[in-house]
Length: 117
Image (cartoon, rainbow, N blue to C red; front, side):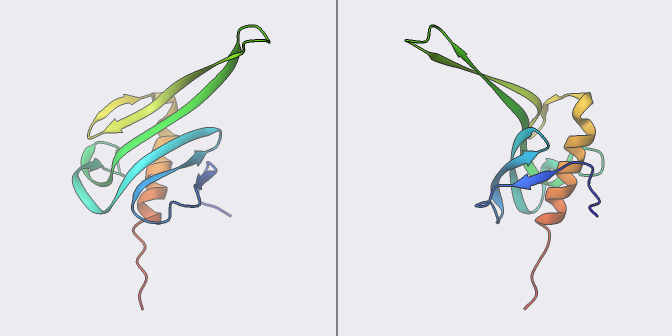
């Protein structure tokens, strides 16, 4: 049984530090995860700016709609952002706080594992 309340997935090609993207429940996310904690990263304990490995995080959902007539269809894409961090929080919707916190803890744990030979 998992210790997590949300279904967190990471894209297959994202298995090292750096730009990582994936999904959590029905939402998409991307993050910039560093090998070691940095001063402007997200503190995983309280989500403040402080020592953390994540310096970029965005939790979002894209909604696509088909517009126009059937002979000249057009596509409209709207991106709803629920959390956005880039050295500071510009968006942190309180309804998604627990989801964001769990995602950050997951990434901190996953990318702090070190293999010993």
